[in-house]
Length: 614
Ligand SMILES: [Zn+2]
Image (cartoon, rainbow, N blue to C red):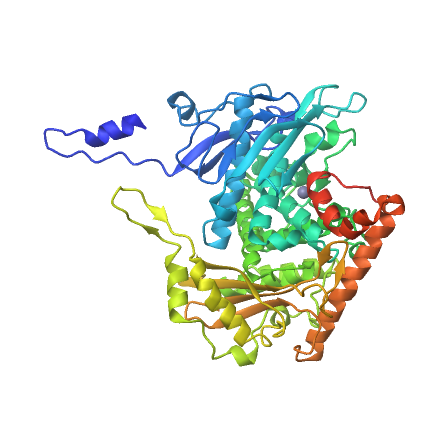
């Protein structure tokens, strides 16, 4: 940015010329889908991401692209996105054959996903220990891509398209998974989920890994709705019914075809042909398949919300009948509907991501997620003009997804609560001030604004709070309590008021030999509680996953705890029955099998199902 600095130093005859502001956003060209759609309408798109200073790679605050190919043992030259000739053309043009475009695209998609999380969470995302997420666009030769928690990296493979049935690809063409917007967004989401809830890769019930997969697909598919031209075309083609099958709802199209399956890898409507089938939630165990139930539920909710939002509009242009005339949609209606669909998609994605703050720290279920979505949205938008929460409740119910121990599907029943004994209890003032202040940039004399981390010194106080109120928080006072995190978040609610929340998480792991310890294949069942505090330090909500024990105060709590233990055992038994290794493996494998299956799900079958539904 030499130009900018030289202008700042320039003194005119009048003595002062204002500095040219650095633009807030950086436009970068990407494939909206993947190279298989080539230049077809909307596939060559531009994303706008925060304009941070970049080193060649690109390497920024959170993401570092390293173009190393392990199969070839070689590096490709890194792209410099801050070079003037690149800036002036909004990044390099989309190209299969230029590795520098591949680097640009994975950076742009990863940052877009991170920014969506930051917007929804109301706070910046940091990776643990200030580390950067390393992205390897050509990591290896193979039909896969995955997130590796050990090295905090996204690894994208490349492979040769199927020679018999390559779909829109050329037979034998090289397919780069890093050039699929969906795959890049999916893998980035895994990395962020792992940052926000690192215990969600322990397979302690059949929903945990499926939640990881499902949410990663949800984020990826919602990205399609951020490209206006794509959206406009689909709304035109489906005559204002974006729930119709089409590119918008397909995930990883090129990958699916190139691997010979003759279709996209997955879709937003999952395995449903027609009406949702609640039996699937009982029957499916594989993480990607089960995750697709969550995806279908969320998109069903989205379509309901969209229809509610555009109902007025459609009535207005149809003279009150609501029935669209035959033929092409009227141009104004098409434009307005496109705008509504984009904003509804962003709203629903934000609801889905913001819900994270309200999830328990361990052993998540889809039902917990529904409760989190409903509660988080109620806090921000109590009026709920477009029946967003009712849409979610109906869509989840249609698929047989219920919350643990919640007997009614009324919104009030699904909302998380606060134990009465915590009504008058508050966090210590100093703790609140220090946690909130940690989120603001502070000025230091060398001119660089620095962000402060949350001081670890406040953790013992938080642990003290949890110990004092262990039973109310459904934690076992006999066992050690570990503070797993605290974050403030800042939102503006529907009335324009600032909503400040402080979210704390605690975990308990019964030690070896403890009668409460349930361990299968190297994974122990833990207790965990998340508490959402208001800015005055009072508890607003708690989300809990208790372990059985005498500290639990009522039948509902005991029932939830008992069902957790049963659910874990059943899940492990079901996986054992499907696992051919189990038959001949040694004791070491048996002792670590659940742990290994978790990492297996991430690193060996990052993209694809292990088996198709028979
Ligand atoms: Zn995945």
